[in-house]
Image (cartoon, one colour):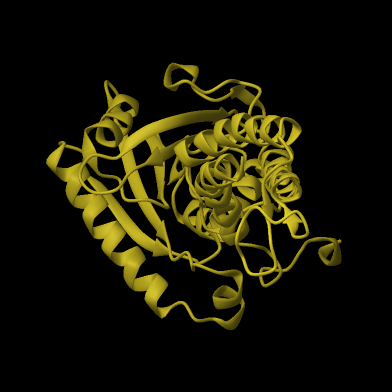
Length: 294
């Protein structure tokens, strides 16, 4: 019956027709610049009749800006990112078209796919401290997009960014490859920045040193009520050592656990950076103070 057929007004937009050309959709959450990123695109275009489309999502720095619709600055940054990415690809002999996308990365990809038939989606993203909407958008795209997705996680800015991490998700969300271990990343560990790794090392080693200093306190150093040392009626230096070891120990344990268990979850942004720097710089300072009290 005619009533069983969906009306034209209720149908969604028809998907773009698949052509003989290989369709590569480049999602530029970071600028496609530098030899490594140009080569990554060129390798996928090599030997193929390829069509390249670049979308630069207008990612806001915070979820509040996104919710409030304050995306004017984000769109300006995205336009600059798009213009430079197209210029870099053109210099490498890769002709591409492009557009500024939605501030939601997943929606930016879906919008692009309505007009462009992609055989592969290449996402160029931040490795260190990515904006929340970028991280969440990539995770959502992995679950909802049928095309193969290759994620290039990049460190550094300027003319020579470095591809520090590669992840491939096959069509339908199958993870064909985990992180690229050529760059020193384990397949079983989350992505860590240099400051994360340094913070973990300093936290573990430094906490051990603070515990040893507190445990081997001679008990002769005290802090009197006037702020000097040597008066047995004052607050003991050994007690201060214990407080320092306990306080920094708690901070360091919380930071390391947060990194190892919640790296891809809620432990991000300001608090991750704050505790990382507290572990990295506060722990050596605490060791010096504790040693002087002995």
